[in-house]
Figure 1 (cartoon, rainbow, N blue to C red):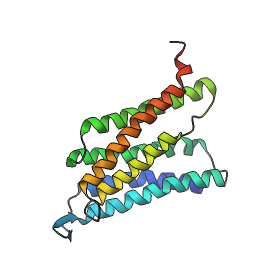
Figure 2: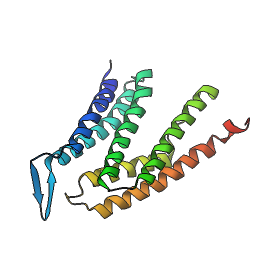
Figure 3: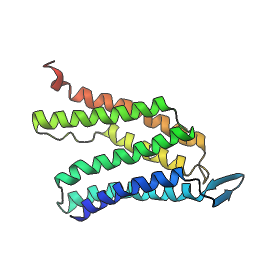
Figure 4: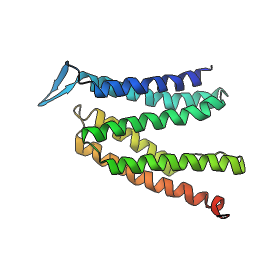
Amino acid sequence: MNIANKLTLARVIMIPIFIGLMLWQGVHMISIGDEVIPVTQLIAGIIFIVASVTDYLDGYLARKLNLVTSFGAFFDPMADKLLVIAALLLFVEKGWVPAWAVFIIIARELMVTGLRVLLAQTNGKVMAAALPGKIKTMTQMLAIICFLFQNFGTTLPIAQGLFYICLFFTIYSGADYFWNARFLFKEL
Protein backbone atom coordinates (compact mmCIF):
# COMPACT_ATOMS: atom_id res chain seq x y z
CA MET A 1 0.00 0.00 0.00
CA ASN A 2 1.50 3.34 -1.05
CA ILE A 3 1.73 6.50 1.10
CA ALA A 4 -1.29 8.19 -0.55
CA ASN A 5 -3.50 5.18 0.16
CA LYS A 6 -2.20 4.95 3.73
CA LEU A 7 -3.24 8.57 4.27
CA THR A 8 -6.70 7.82 2.87
CA LEU A 9 -7.00 4.78 5.13
CA ALA A 10 -5.87 6.89 8.11
CA ARG A 11 -8.64 9.38 7.32
CA VAL A 12 -11.22 6.56 7.25
CA ILE A 13 -9.96 5.39 10.67
CA MET A 14 -10.21 8.96 12.04
CA ILE A 15 -13.95 9.16 11.27
CA PRO A 16 -15.23 6.88 14.08
CA ILE A 17 -12.74 8.49 16.48
CA PHE A 18 -14.08 11.93 15.51
CA ILE A 19 -17.68 10.72 15.99
CA GLY A 20 -16.89 9.14 19.36
CA LEU A 21 -15.22 12.29 20.65
CA MET A 22 -18.13 14.47 19.51
CA LEU A 23 -20.66 12.19 21.20
CA TRP A 24 -18.70 11.67 24.39
CA GLN A 25 -19.39 14.45 26.84
CA GLY A 26 -16.13 14.15 28.70
CA VAL A 27 -15.81 15.25 32.28
CA HIS A 28 -12.86 17.49 31.50
CA MET A 29 -14.03 20.89 30.42
CA ILE A 30 -12.27 23.99 29.16
CA SER A 31 -13.48 27.41 30.26
CA ILE A 32 -13.20 30.15 27.69
CA GLY A 33 -14.77 33.37 28.83
CA ASP A 34 -18.32 32.50 29.79
CA GLU A 35 -18.29 29.31 27.71
CA VAL A 36 -17.47 25.84 29.03
CA ILE A 37 -16.90 23.15 26.42
CA PRO A 38 -15.77 19.54 26.57
CA VAL A 39 -12.12 18.86 25.82
CA THR A 40 -13.38 16.09 23.54
CA GLN A 41 -14.86 18.70 21.15
CA LEU A 42 -11.49 20.43 20.95
CA ILE A 43 -9.73 17.13 20.20
CA ALA A 44 -12.44 16.24 17.65
CA GLY A 45 -11.81 19.58 15.95
CA ILE A 46 -8.09 18.87 15.75
CA ILE A 47 -8.80 15.41 14.31
CA PHE A 48 -11.11 16.94 11.71
CA ILE A 49 -8.40 19.39 10.66
CA VAL A 50 -5.79 16.60 10.46
CA ALA A 51 -8.20 14.48 8.40
CA SER A 52 -8.87 17.44 6.09
CA VAL A 53 -5.13 17.99 5.59
CA THR A 54 -4.65 14.29 4.75
CA ASP A 55 -7.33 14.74 2.07
CA TYR A 56 -5.23 17.38 0.36
CA LEU A 57 -1.97 15.56 0.98
CA ASP A 58 -3.00 12.13 -0.31
CA GLY A 59 -4.29 13.62 -3.57
CA TYR A 60 -1.18 15.73 -3.99
CA LEU A 61 1.15 12.77 -3.37
CA ALA A 62 -0.85 10.46 -5.63
CA ARG A 63 -0.54 12.91 -8.52
CA LYS A 64 3.02 14.09 -7.83
CA LEU A 65 4.50 10.60 -7.30
CA ASN A 66 2.21 8.86 -9.83
CA LEU A 67 0.63 6.73 -7.10
CA VAL A 68 -2.93 6.82 -8.44
CA THR A 69 -4.69 3.49 -7.72
CA SER A 70 -8.22 2.11 -7.97
CA PHE A 71 -8.29 1.93 -4.15
CA GLY A 72 -7.46 5.63 -3.86
CA ALA A 73 -9.84 6.64 -6.65
CA PHE A 74 -12.69 4.96 -4.78
CA PHE A 75 -11.83 5.46 -1.10
CA ASP A 76 -10.46 9.02 -1.21
CA PRO A 77 -13.74 10.69 -2.21
CA MET A 78 -15.68 8.20 -0.08
CA ALA A 79 -13.62 9.08 3.01
CA ASP A 80 -14.17 12.79 2.34
CA LYS A 81 -17.92 12.40 2.06
CA LEU A 82 -18.16 10.17 5.15
CA LEU A 83 -16.14 12.65 7.23
CA VAL A 84 -18.29 15.61 6.18
CA ILE A 85 -21.58 13.70 6.55
CA ALA A 86 -20.56 12.52 10.03
CA ALA A 87 -19.80 16.10 11.11
CA LEU A 88 -23.01 17.52 9.66
CA LEU A 89 -25.21 14.83 11.21
CA LEU A 90 -23.60 15.50 14.58
CA PHE A 91 -24.31 19.20 14.11
CA VAL A 92 -27.99 18.42 13.42
CA GLU A 93 -28.09 16.50 16.69
CA LYS A 94 -26.60 19.49 18.51
CA GLY A 95 -29.14 21.84 16.90
CA TRP A 96 -26.48 23.85 15.07
CA VAL A 97 -27.81 23.20 11.54
CA PRO A 98 -31.24 22.17 10.21
CA ALA A 99 -31.77 18.60 9.04
CA TRP A 100 -33.36 19.71 5.74
CA ALA A 101 -30.16 21.53 4.75
CA VAL A 102 -27.99 18.53 5.61
CA PHE A 103 -30.33 16.34 3.56
CA ILE A 104 -29.76 18.62 0.55
CA ILE A 105 -25.99 18.34 1.00
CA ILE A 106 -26.09 14.54 1.33
CA ALA A 107 -28.48 14.21 -1.64
CA ARG A 108 -26.20 16.35 -3.81
CA GLU A 109 -23.15 14.27 -2.87
CA LEU A 110 -24.95 11.02 -3.74
CA MET A 111 -26.34 12.39 -6.99
CA VAL A 112 -23.01 13.81 -8.19
CA THR A 113 -21.25 10.56 -7.23
CA GLY A 114 -23.83 8.65 -9.28
CA LEU A 115 -23.34 11.06 -12.16
CA ARG A 116 -19.57 10.49 -12.03
CA VAL A 117 -20.10 6.71 -12.18
CA LEU A 118 -22.54 7.06 -15.08
CA LEU A 119 -20.13 9.29 -16.99
CA ALA A 120 -17.25 6.89 -16.40
CA GLN A 121 -19.31 3.92 -17.59
CA THR A 122 -20.72 5.56 -20.69
CA ASN A 123 -17.77 7.68 -21.83
CA GLY A 124 -14.85 6.27 -19.88
CA LYS A 125 -14.17 9.80 -18.63
CA VAL A 126 -13.60 11.09 -15.14
CA MET A 127 -15.54 14.22 -14.26
CA ALA A 128 -13.04 16.59 -12.72
CA ALA A 129 -14.04 18.92 -9.91
CA ALA A 130 -15.20 22.26 -11.30
CA LEU A 131 -14.65 25.63 -9.59
CA PRO A 132 -18.13 25.72 -7.96
CA GLY A 133 -17.47 22.25 -6.50
CA LYS A 134 -14.12 23.38 -5.14
CA ILE A 135 -15.73 26.44 -3.56
CA LYS A 136 -18.39 24.15 -2.07
CA THR A 137 -15.72 21.95 -0.54
CA MET A 138 -13.73 24.91 0.82
CA THR A 139 -16.77 26.59 2.42
CA GLN A 140 -17.95 23.23 3.76
CA MET A 141 -14.63 22.56 5.50
CA LEU A 142 -14.42 26.13 6.83
CA ALA A 143 -17.97 25.97 8.17
CA ILE A 144 -17.34 22.64 9.91
CA ILE A 145 -14.10 23.92 11.45
CA CYS A 146 -15.89 27.08 12.65
CA PHE A 147 -18.63 24.96 14.25
CA LEU A 148 -16.05 22.80 15.99
CA PHE A 149 -14.10 25.82 17.25
CA GLN A 150 -17.01 28.20 17.78
CA ASN A 151 -15.90 28.86 21.33
CA PHE A 152 -12.31 29.51 20.28
CA GLY A 153 -12.62 32.79 18.44
CA THR A 154 -15.50 32.15 16.04
CA THR A 155 -19.16 32.26 16.89
CA LEU A 156 -22.15 30.12 16.02
CA PRO A 157 -23.60 32.82 13.69
CA ILE A 158 -20.30 32.94 11.74
CA ALA A 159 -20.28 29.15 11.42
CA GLN A 160 -23.94 29.13 10.37
CA GLY A 161 -23.30 31.89 7.83
CA LEU A 162 -20.52 29.83 6.25
CA PHE A 163 -22.80 26.80 6.34
CA TYR A 164 -25.47 28.59 4.30
CA ILE A 165 -22.84 29.82 1.82
CA CYS A 166 -21.76 26.17 1.55
CA LEU A 167 -25.39 25.15 1.03
CA PHE A 168 -25.72 27.66 -1.82
CA PHE A 169 -22.59 26.32 -3.53
CA THR A 170 -23.76 22.76 -2.88
CA ILE A 171 -26.92 23.41 -4.88
CA TYR A 172 -25.18 25.55 -7.52
CA SER A 173 -22.32 23.10 -8.11
CA GLY A 174 -24.70 20.13 -8.23
CA ALA A 175 -26.80 21.89 -10.87
CA ASP A 176 -23.60 22.84 -12.74
CA TYR A 177 -22.40 19.23 -12.85
CA PHE A 178 -25.75 17.99 -14.14
CA TRP A 179 -25.99 20.81 -16.69
CA ASN A 180 -22.53 19.97 -18.05
CA ALA A 181 -23.44 16.27 -18.26
CA ARG A 182 -26.91 16.81 -19.74
CA PHE A 183 -25.89 14.94 -22.91
CA LEU A 184 -26.04 11.73 -20.85
CA PHE A 185 -29.79 12.12 -20.45
CA LYS A 186 -30.78 12.79 -24.07
CA GLU A 187 -31.67 9.12 -24.50
CA LEU A 188 -34.35 9.27 -21.79
